[in-house]
Length: 194
Image (tube, rainbow, N blue to C red; front, side):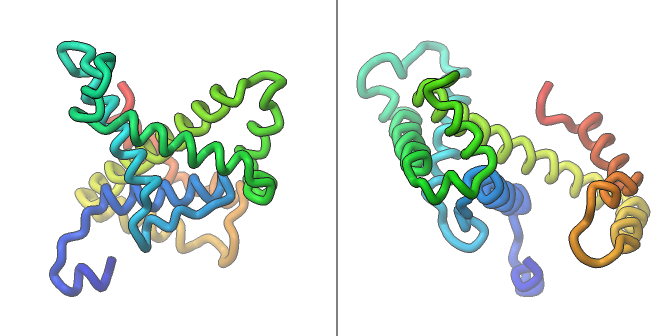
């Protein structure tokens, strides 16, 4: 980011945060890093196409997607969804991937007992989409509000800098009262969900 800013280029922080959150969620939940911060990610692209298609369908005056072939012409959502389903099925079938991913391993363990394969795949895609989109929008709003209030930005930075070096514990995070207040105020003022 610094190199691009120094070169006078604009940086789309919303897109960057979406990529960051996608990489974080994919690594923590699925044991795979999409690497979308460093390169094009067809998986993230499919998620964005699918989300845009769902928005288009929600606001369409008629259910065009029910007419064979029209959805492909108008929004591409069905193709993106098919690729996402294929990707999630491949992750579920990979014994090495699901062993290291907490959410994936837990959900895979209930397959057949409580969830059908189709329900499991749908839940994983929904989790990924919901986490990526809402987290990136909320973080974008928090950064926007912090940019408008440099004194709060400094207080928050000082608070985080006062933590001991190394991995932060739950107690460390709980002690960040200014940081917690910024998140709560961001969610109150600029909530991504109604």
